[in-house]
Length: 134
Image (tube, rainbow, N blue to C red):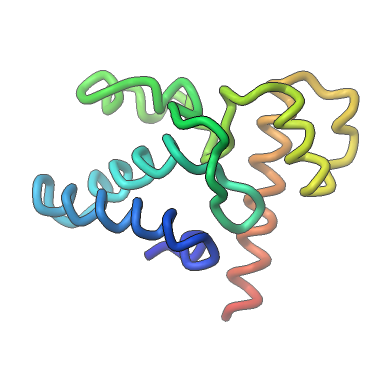
């Protein structure tokens, strides 16, 4: 299980594990099973810092998560994934997350800039947590 999920609520862990197990049965162990599990997770959870938190409303979190099947696989490297940030959330929600993560300059940012800044803050928090765990 990825370390970000180990620091997340049990429901997030169970969502990822159940989907991952089913994907392994269908596709075999590997990248596709992991992508499938994360796609499922991102419909109900968003990444905040070094862990996942339940979203207020279920649904796709970004342009990549809105795609299905062959279309999703065809576009997986287009940069449409927000890395667990709920890019479809309101600007106010993103601002509140950015505030929790102490993102500087957040009050002047557009919605897209907030998504990118939260992604970078999440990456830094995850790296720091992994280093602390090591």
